[in-house]
Amino acid sequence: MAGRLDLGPAPGLTGCLPRPEQAIARFSVQSELGRTRFDKEHLVTLRLRFLIFVSLAALGCARRDPPPPPPLEVLVVPVVQRDVPEWIGTLDGSVNADIRPKVEGYLMGQFYKEGQYVEAKDPLFEIDPRQFRAAHEQAQGALARAEAQLSKASKDVERFRPLAAQRAVSQQELDNALSAEREAKAAVESARAAVEQTALNLGWTKVGSPIHGIVGIAKSQVGDLVSPQTVMTTVSTVDPIRVTYGISEREYMAFAELINRANYATTERGPALELILDDGRTYSHPGKAVLVDREVDVKTGTMTIRGFFPNPGNILRPGQYGKVRAALDVKAGALLVPQRAVTELQGGYRVGVVGQDGKAEIRAVEPGARVGELWVIEKGLKPGEQVIVAGLQYVRAGMAVQAKPDPGGSPAGP
Image 1 (cartoon, helix red, strand yellow):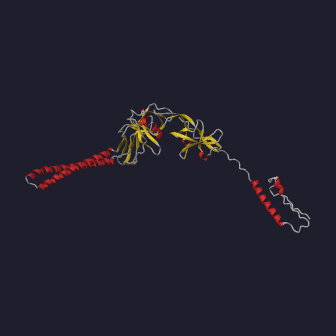
Image 2 (cartoon, rainbow, N blue to C red):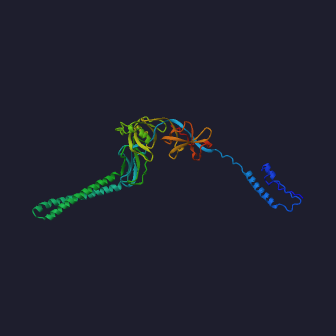
Image 3 (tube, one colour):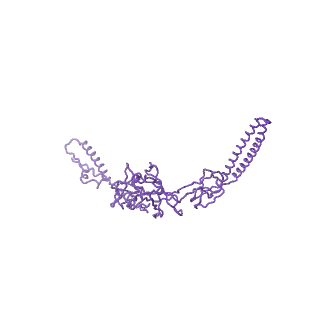
């Protein structure tokens, strides 16, 4: 007697398993005539092996390779090459005076037009003078009373002196008269000082400019209560105007012999300066470097230098910035990138560069001087290369990226 057990292919695996594996899904078990019993243990083993095989095959068929991710989007700007001055300077008044009142009171008037040129001692504001005038008159009355007491005391001394010589009055009475005269003189001096002080207070109700220059917008309005802590406005002397810029420690060492020569900090011996304005024009009046700070700033690694430029017509104003070019050196053909394109890692500097094949490269560079928001790159870049300014933290060397121009613009400024 013969029998056949047909397991068939596993459901859902048709077309998934390879053909040799499909063949194993069918097998037969025959029982020969005369065998006393069926080999059940062998059948169970075959079934377990079959189930394990089907599970592994199903897992293999379900696995699919994920699609490749799209290229990472980064913002880039081109490396530009142009001549740059060595330093960026900020302009400020040669003298800046904060206008504060000497007395406290209510502001009654403003005498100047904001933004105009004023001379020294020109009145700017007036504080309510009535209480100070009353105090001054009161002090004058106290002075008159003290003077009257002094006059009486002096006459007493004149009268008692001959009487004391004739022993008509006692020496004690004469001494009392002399003491009263000295006390009256001291009272007069004190009252006179009080009169002078109240006169000063009354005069200080008119707030004037201590210097000549351009007066700023008023920070106190009529009706405000002002005090000696109140900054009412600011006056700046802008002719000449001061420029402040910093040079790096490396630059200082390169020009230390020139900087430290005798009498450097004078307008006659300092190097000539040129000022490049924000619109790219060179200021028509040359300036002079007049002051070198005593130390290198440990926070920025720079040394501060100050110079002055003539400013007829008060064209230049405090707060402007310009590029300062000294007769010491001008860097020609410098390569510039935005400072945000440069990252520092373990004491070194690097930038991300997008090649023509669309792949990113992490490149070590040697930065030089900073020019505004840009950075001069001494080594590591070529003109026209695209540097990454946003997304660099996600970039790896050799990664495919999608470069888009930075909407903030390129470093190719004036």
